[in-house]
Length: 169
Image (cartoon, rainbow, N blue to C red; front, side):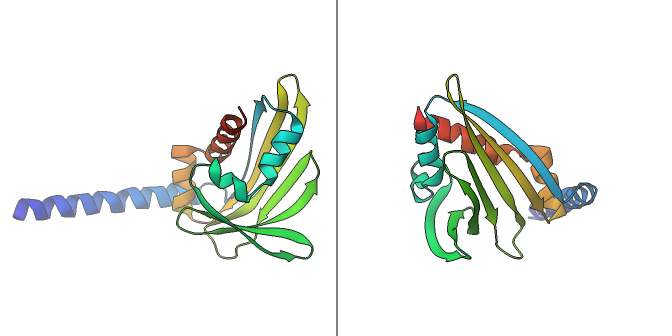
């Protein structure tokens, strides 16, 4: 039984050290980041636009998106709550230029992250070039470190565009 206790203590100590290192590294990283990802999707602009603006329908093709709720408008802007991960995210459509540009901004206060996505569509030789730029803010130094050093801040953007491309194939 003593060896089990030592193993538990050693694992706990290792986790504490890793968390401390992640915290220190994270405090040295900027809270805000901007990252851009592009993809060429073999579908016409109108079809891509329909998919990216059908927020409730994205549960059928976007991994991890369990549920989407339409909330009352704020100052004339659409509001949606997405259930992905342990905590829902509330987004407002802050800009919408039909068939060309969509900007969605996180409006949750006190959440682990905030920011906006700027999504731009343009015709290209294969169909549509989709450019997504994330202007993000990750408050927790540990979360900043883990995101930067493991997945990269562009991870969800790449995942989103990959799923969109597959959905429209």
